[in-house]
Amino acid sequence: MTKSDMDTDTGTIVSRRSGVSPEQPRRIMTGDRFCTKCGYNLVGQEIVREKHYQLLIVRCPECATVAGLQDYPRLGTWGARWGMVLAALWLILLLCMWPATSGIMLGFGIGITDEGSRVYARRLDDLQTMANAQAATPATPAPTTTPTPTAPAPPPLPLPLLPGQGLPATITIQGTTIVLGGGGRFGSSHFKDWWQQQDQQAVLAAAGGWWGVFDHTEFLLLIPAGALVFLFGCFWSVSLMQLPRRRLVYCAGAIVGLACLFAMIPLLEWDQRAVYSARRAAQYQLALPALATTFGALIVPLSLGLAFGRSLVKLAVSALLPPKLRGPIAVLWAAEK
Image (cartoon, rainbow, N blue to C red):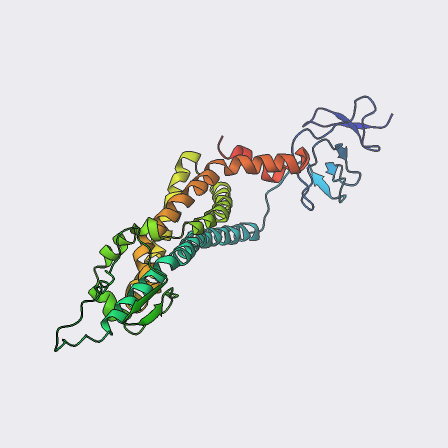
């Protein structure tokens, strides 16, 4: 029998020549250890003694890279330097993703407000067209003789209309027929003067309030918006693993708060241009309730993503990866312990 060594760490007699003890069964790796080259989990692999240096090793079955059983600290300083660089890059990524998430919520809010206010913009454009047509009608001169009794002339169309009352398709003034149904995009050159003379809140209330004039079909955009925001919530849930779940609500508040701050930019732009066109006037009057409704609806999927994102990622990892390959992302299971 060849000379054998007693391994003090494992208590196993290992042959110098063959690398396997003839008296004891094979020694295998029982803990998680990952290959430094391909990342394969070496658990379950056979532990052998290397012939040249007589060190206990495990060889990766995927790429044949040798992994020692004992780790020694690196003498160089570049490992720590690269670690700081990667940490800084990760911090920059998170700081960029914060306004990106808020910007997506704001983008959907502006899109819904812009498209949903078209109905009210057309109504304002038609009201202004009717007012200009009535103002341009010449006054009838006083008769010099007693006129023949005729049917009374129809009274002028009141502006604004009663709540819930729709605008006619055409109006006839002094024999001139005016077709309504304007686009409300640019208004007319007289819209500024007419709009400044109106009680703007009364005009909106007479039309049925913001909910009555808003195009409700535009809120269907909240379905894809909610799905996208939910994915961002899952991203933040996994990215902020150092935070417990109960504190992730602050993350949702920070995202929605930044979106509200960004919303001041279009609100100020619509306020400055509201007197120039019916489209801008409608956007400005409907912006606050529409944006508030959009943000209030999107905060629900965002909170759900923050609350259940980690569990869903764990479920996806468990379904797609075998146990031996889950080691590098084992922090998902150990983060909140």
